[in-house]
Length: 348
View 1 (cartoon, rainbow, N blue to C red):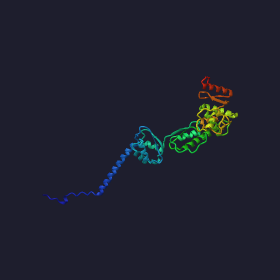
View 2 (cartoon, rainbow, N blue to C red):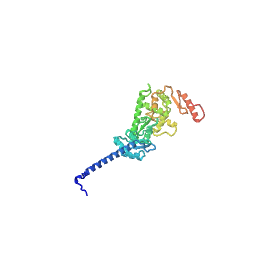
View 3 (cartoon, rainbow, N blue to C red):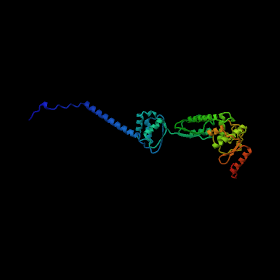
View 4 (cartoon, one colour):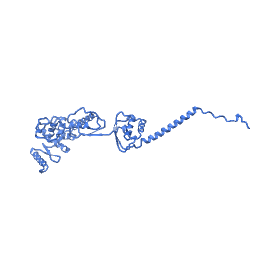
């Protein structure tokens, strides 16, 4: 039996200390974290530009003060996104979470989280429209604003008759009613200032306020834009001669003050009422406008047609026929009455 000498044995392996094991575990954990983060980033990057689940456009209101996580949850509940985490992480990594704007948004079908974030940062909210018809009274316009969907706050002011310009106004969800009302007043002032500077010479009224008053009568007499300069000329010719305007719409305003439409024809008794707005009883312009004239009526009043006409009456087909003399006018009225009775007679 052979004997081994201790010198012939291999040296013992160095002991593995706990410190070295801990370092390896830590490095492995870091590697796994980096790998996981890279995978999460790749997944998130892919999802950030992937179409969302919505099959149709979806309209959502984002209230003021709502954070990115709450916005993401709201979008998921509405079916716009399926991974709100992608949206919130991207917003924070891109330092855009504090730039999101409140409002009403219409998200198209299949919109990506990237596109959603761009919309919220840019504030591309839904644009609503409110059309104020020409010839409406202040009472009617205020009722229209009060009922407009998406506007906020009460109407605390009542502008004077004729102070609001009829046109189409754009607004966003949450805009104030009083703010829109101020825009309408500003639009009328701007339009009137511009048109007043371009007015014809020697008009029989001295102020822009008088122009609005006469334009409101023109507006109520005809909805035919091509006729307005000639209708305005009739009233201007009558003012120059000191004749009464004899305008039916002023009598209607005397009866209703613009609070509601008159649901019946005017009677002879109506035409005789003693009211400052009744231009059958009182010469000159009435005390103020009877409605809100549009830009075309204002322009026609400040630049009327050059005619000698003093009268006009409906022609039975939606327009009017004009006359320089009372005899001619009476014949036109007689023909209209024949048409109304269905007894023939050529349209004047």
